[in-house]
Every structure is written in structure tokens, then in C-alpha cells.
Length: 391
Ligand SMILES: NC(=O)c1ccc[n+]([C@@H]2O[C@H](COP(=O)([O-])OP(=O)(O)OC[C@H]3O[C@@H](n4cnc5c(N)ncnc54)[C@H](O)[C@@H]3O)[C@@H](O)[C@H]2O)c1
Image 1 (tube, rainbow, N blue to C red):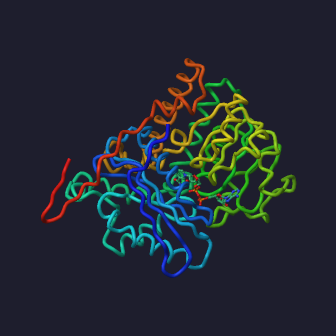
Image 2: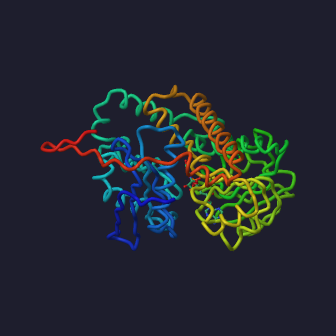
Image 3: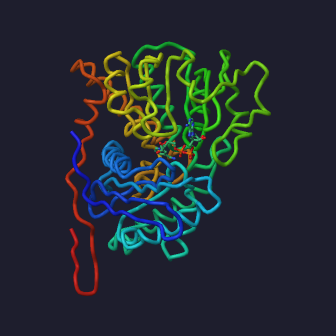
């Protein structure tokens, strides 16, 4: 099923023991997109899997202009010199970034930091050479920059586009299953994605009964006050216990699978559902907000237990859809129009996936790999005074 990445670049930091990779799974029309992750556990193999998931995600996003790539840095994102490490990594990748490898942010990195480093080197958003001279694309970039400064429900657009899409995907899947009102949800991770997903689901009438972050797991049978938890979380997506209600139960974050729920939404790290704990999953629906949150062995167990899933590249495409749709002029660049567009696409993809899986009596993941299969890679669009290769 899995195909090999088109390009892998390895980097060793000269100042620390940080190590990093940039993996392009495929180029489409010379362009490719994906975020850079920073975490001590990042490996080359993980970045390869994440890049592949990005390639599928661009197909699910109906993009005709972008392939999938990913950056990864094995380093502590909370270290005092994390920004400097990211900067040196980006400098090493600049020849690719300046020729159509569009690296954004991911777990452990912030989009504003990435943009700040790009601007230092005269790059606004990475583009191919021909996009750089296309007035429509340049207008799209300006629109996208403006959009990022705007808020919806009190949160910046970049902090909601993915999480809201995940929530709409979960809602569509739950409705397809005839799951009923007020379903109980547990969410792992309370960063950019987890927090906004929890907020939208609570707005849609779901009961968020448990949330974990890097430090703890908090649960309440009656449902958590998501807005209050958001109001008091820190920049690393960690909740503040000082604002927990008296009836909240605080447990180690490793116990996030111990509490009963209907829908489980991992929004943090990869492989968090694996052979050691997949049997503990009590939900009848898992929505993969994080990229690759279920290991191959864990997935065998989930499939065996006949738990329904919304695969990562269908559930969490909000950020890249908004990027593609605004930059290439597919949608009005205002917050509500962008969210409406993501909602429509997520609901449509989930319904297609669940309908097809039911028709074929197959597991949703297996069907998704067929429906959203990416194209073979183009090469990078390379332009120099002596050599011009344009597609
Ligand atoms: N940000 C996006 O737009 C986007 C888009 C698509 C996919 N994703 C994926 O979603 C996931 C989360 O991304 P994000 O941008 O929200 O990251 P983030 O850095 O904003 O937040 C990460 C969250 O995970 C928590 N966390 C870390 N270790 C944990 C642990 N052991 N147990 C429980 N929680 C833990 C952190 O405390 C934090 O709340 C990643 O897999 C990322 O690749 C993000």
C-alpha cells in the first residue's frame, strides 16, 4: 500500500545534538506542502509516514496543485533554544523551500515562528518559481496573510481550521452511525487542534467528558467547561488546574483510555493507540485528528473490534484546505466562508468514506487509501538562468 518517498533530506545541527529530516512524498506541479514537527521522539521513519499522509490529505482536500511533504526535528520543543534550532533547520532547507517545498508548522512548532524565519530570508510563503510571478497567487497569499490575523469564536484562524474540521468530521460520522444526541467525547491533546475541536463539539451539543495534555488527564461525567479550559491554557496547550471545577477528576495522562466514552479523538502524538492499549478503547468511533495516531499493530486490534474510524487525512485537512483554497482563489477569504468550505468538504468526504466502506463491508482505513490515492511524484520545478524546466 505504502509507496516510497520521492526525496529525503537529513540534517545534523552544528550547535546541539538535534537531528532533522525533510521528506517530500510527492510534488504536484512542482509544489508540495506540510508542517515541521519538533519533538524529542521524532524519527526519520515517522517523518516519512507523515509525508505520505500529507500526500493523501491533499487529494482529500481536492487540491490540484500540491503534493505532500513533512519536516521533523528530534529536539525538545520546550528547550530555551528551540527557536534557534528551528531556524538552523529552516536555513538548511532554504534551497528547497525557495523552490516549492512549502513547510509550515506542526506539533511543537509555531506558524508565526516559521513565518518570522522565512521573512528574515525574504520569503513570505514558499512558492514555486512560476507561482512567484503569478499575480493571482500573489493576491491569494496576501489574502491568506490577512486571514491569519482574523479570529472566529475568539480564536485565531490558524488555531481553528483543523480542529473545527475534525469536529465536523466526527459529527458527520456519528450521525451516519445514528449515534444519538449528547454523545460523550474524550480528547487527547489540548493544543491548536484539540482545543478548537473540543470547543466546536461542545457547541454542536456533544459532552466532552475527558481531555489530556502533556501533564495530566482531566475528566468529568457531566462534561468539562471547554471554554474555561481554553481561556486558561498556556502556549504549549497545557491546562491550568487552578481553574478546574471541584467535581473534575485529575489522573495521569496515561489513563486517557480508562474512562468510558462514545467518541475518542487523539489530537497529539503519533502511535498513541498501539498494541499495548488498543484493547482498552471503549469508543465505537475513533476520529484521527493527530497524524498517524494509531500504529499498524494497534490498527489490527481496532479493526478486529469493528470500531469505526475517520482516518487522519480525511478528518484533519482543515489547515491545508484553507491554505489551498485561499491561495488559489477557490473561496472568499473571510473566516466564516473558509470554515463553511472546510465543513462542507469534511462532511462530504466522511459520508463518501462511510458509505463506500459500508457498501463493500470493509474497514474505513482500507477504503480511504483507495479513494484518496495520490499521484506519482512530479519533480521540483527548477529555474536558473541557464536551465528552465516548466511543466
Ligand atoms: N495544527 C494543525 O493545523 C494540524 C493539522 C493537521 C494535523 N495536525 C496534527 O494534530 C496533532 C496536534 O497538533 P497541534 O498543532 O494541536 O499541536 P500543539 O503543539 O498545538 O499541541 C499539542 C498538544 O498535545 C499535548 N501533548 C503532548 N504530549 C502529550 C501526551 N503524551 N499526552 C497527551 N497530550 C500530549 C500538548 O500538551 C498539547 O496540548 C499533531 O499530530 C499534528 O500533526 C495538526
